[in-house]
Amino acid sequence: MRKSLLQLLLAAFLMVSLSAVQAQDADEKMPGALTLKALFVNFDTPFRGEATDFQNTTNGVEIGYIHPINKFFNLAIPLKIGEARFPVNTDPGSGEKELFGALDAILQFQILPGDRIISPYVMAGAGALIERRGDDANSNMHLDLPMGVGTNVRLTKNLGLNVQAEFRNSLSDLRNNTQLGAGLIWKFGKAGPPPLADMDGDGIIDIDDDCPAVAGLSSLRGCPDGDGDGIADKSDDCPNTAGLAKFAGCPDSDSDGIKDGDDGCPTEAGPKDNNGCPIMDRDGDGVDDADDRCPDEKGPSNNNGCPVILIVDTDGDGVEDVKDKCPTLAGPASNNGCPEMAKEDKERLTFAMKNVQFNTSRASLRTASNSANILDEIAGLMKKYPSYSLSISGHTDSVGDAASNQKLSENRAKTCYDYLILKGIDASRMNYVGYGETQPIADNINKAGREKNRRVEFNMFLK
Image (cartoon, rainbow, N blue to C red):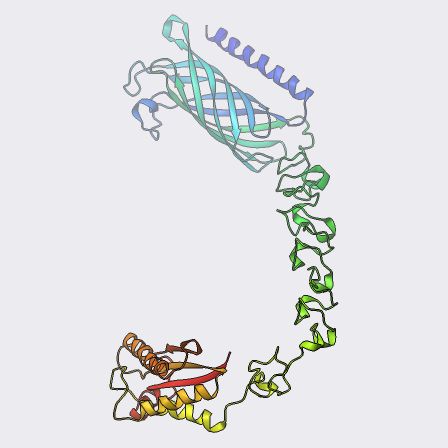
């Protein structure tokens, strides 16, 4: 019976191997392989959970054929023959050693595909195990579901080491087992050239693909064109907006020959020397509106597009009214046609900064000081120079809380602002602001410095 068992398994293995080798000869793109390994079998470990106890481990031998399916999967057909201690119950070593044979169909998944020195894999499949049953010479077949891990280590071009560990889940009671195998693997057959790489899967091989990592169009040598303008994204300065090749893929919406990014008026055609904007000349006098001081009335270019009859200088200061901020008061062109403040009037503003005084820690004017009279003089200056505006800014020293100082400076500036309104100065000509302790003009360490920092500044200016 033992002889017939071995003959049956060997014949089955030879039939599968021969058919696989014939298939290999017909397709030599990837070489097949034969394996020869020593086996270490244990039917006790699955029940006791003591994988390191080799007392009941038995030996066997495995020969196998491996047929490549693709770069990730192989089909392995192993034939196993040996002795095993088949348990009759879950007690360790409960059975006798008997001869067994097994034939499997295993699918191996290559974790690192390709021709590597170390090639690990995981495996799973199905198989049949035949055991000889005692003195009655009967044999019994069990269906197993093997699964495990293994690796191949290349020694030469065709020869390598193979190590494999598997757990076989049997569909019969008390027949689960573990198997370790170690031996040689020999690759045979001539390997054809590897398939040409196409990393991005766009149908264009990498050596012909200008964008091998991103799927693209064959017309653009494998590069994408996100905006569909026929210009590859890698060469397109505006990859999300369809454009023209002469502008590196950027659009010219108004078709004036200037790309939108450089066009001051991208939706209105205009010459390049006008930044792509149309030249506007509402009155048709040949002077562009941008340079025409009278865009709705015709006039010569030497008069800035204004009619000659409109050149007016009411105050006779040599500054035409259209340029004169003070058209009824004579003043130099350097001061926009407004009269300049006299030196003594400027000095009066500086004097006011030093001498307008307030009650301690309050925003009310000190009655014992000359503060009201000084503010009267500033009101007089505002009436003397009606084209000027006045800025009032309050400041404090650093003594006390910063927030309190900020509020105090604002209130003191407003006190001066309110006083001048009472003296007839239009509120639209004035503004006030508080800076607290943030703009000192002297050191706050000593008393003299702090006195200088406690001030209200008055600044007259032209708008």
